[in-house]
Length: 68
Image (cartoon, rainbow, N blue to C red):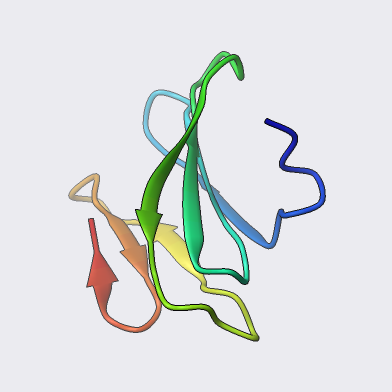
């Protein structure tokens, strides 16, 4: 899947995998080797896109009070 047109916000997880969010509310997970992409979560659409952060507890935090 080509995420280049969708990329809004991204964060690198432990182990080198990548979480990418877009304005449609879809969070994608990209494997560390870049060969596999999957939809990780679907959130409500956001005009400003969501901000992502990895916590010291290795959980993904997303603005709006979401945690995975």
